[in-house]
Length: 609
Image (tube, rainbow, N blue to C red):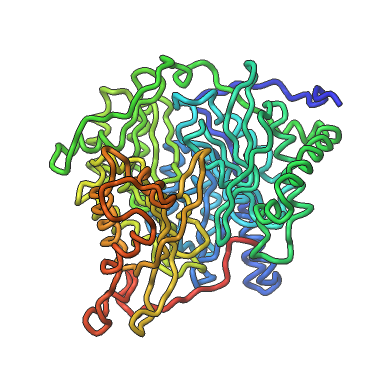
């Protein structure tokens, strides 16, 4: 069969400042009407739950009268107008702050159920939607925040990411999948979460043709898997048919009975990669022979007109690497860990360090103004590390940019360092959470900035990620040092604890971390400091922490010390992780953010409809 039957529409052009309209006014009306019907008992709880999840309203922890509203930010690209609107909605209907997630969404917590439709209506005004941000659908389509500015990329994957997001949004093919489905676009082999997605894509060229290296079947959770490469090269004209084929296979063959094993990664693992790969190739041929023009016309890659995003000197530029320490000038310290040159000559990416993804309404408004003043593309990108990246900032504007951030409390250093700790929402809002991972992440960040951890280049390529349970919303399994929450009985007292993992990696070389030991919540910070101390004693020459840990878990450490294996590490940390008796220090047995006795309370999860 000739692939030419896929007559893709002509590619259109758009301005870099364009604002795609993702939301629909009528959906807000329908949501409000269904809330009223639910309150009157005319819609069952299960039916309403499926409906609200499909529209991005997630039940809040142990309080079903409140919702977390998850806002989809396709490709992570967000405009000043949208930031201002989210700030206003948070003040009016939420808790006065917003939360950036690890999947480039923005979440508003503790919204009254009756107010959700009003939040949705406000989002529609600025082109945003919550549709399919939750539930058994294709979730927010991610794209690397470096896409378009990365010196190692073959081409900008952003237009393709947006086209796929637009194609699947409200598409009948993905409205009732066995479970949630995730698509991640990278910019290059180093930047992007392609090996932990249902579909992960790295842009590449072959004989001058744009295309992708596609990975399938990855994902994190109680059981995690790294994705498999589909084929050597998938040309751009087969991108949509490949994605549709994978979604259709999952829809048809996925496990709809056992919610604990109904993600696509389980299907791939149980069937075997070779068989699944053959089915995808065959299904793609079926799609290409039968897809209607009407369906195909949903997929449109919109290219930009020549402008600021196309400027490039073609050189690979290093990170800003002026030596700093904890006593350095605050601006230079911030510059060291929060600013990176992009491939476009004279422009920089500025990272805004958030505390575990949190930002207040006032900060959102002020940040919007700063972006208008200093970003050549007049927008920002959400990052998987729960920060903002503001791109196309000129060198002579960096001091003024920094001063603006100082005024609003967003000038913390450490965005591109070990200090930028990822933490899911944990027990602050999630039904499944056991521990307050959110607060712990903030405590670590604060302590590390105090200690100047952000200034140490040997720690710069390492990450710390924390989840409040084994379900990996904090992506702990791809962290250099990861933690997931649980509960243990220590000295007769129920205690919040974390299982610590070593050696995870993101990017194309994605790797899942290995479990090391359990650490009580109140000993995590001391344990991390001890690990860094051991690393500095044991490392060879200028070996980075990430490299040293990788060698440690593989038993090939050649350092001058005594810690050469995970068992050695456990022995070295044994005293550090030990708690005093409950009578001597009862607070050591409480979770962060609580002043009462710890108890492991959970409720029905909201991840699936």
